[in-house]
Image: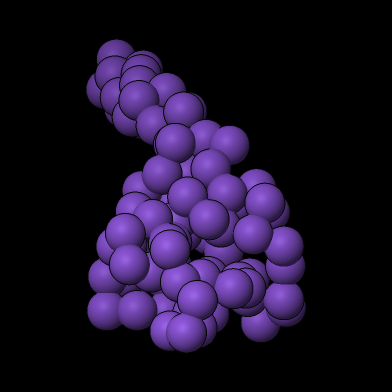
Length: 85
């Protein structure tokens, strides 16, 4: 019975987050929770509106990606900004 309860709790916890993506931000924010289907640009705006307005590129796991790149759980994201824009 205890095993069945543990399995139930494990699957329930997983189902609670099926619509979320968890990424690691290079900034001091650490782990960031976003809606499933969120892009690198969405992350930039979630960190701060100024970051979103000034972002020019994103790096995911060290590779440059378009700002429209759809994020997946566990990725390391760095947002590159330019102040003059």
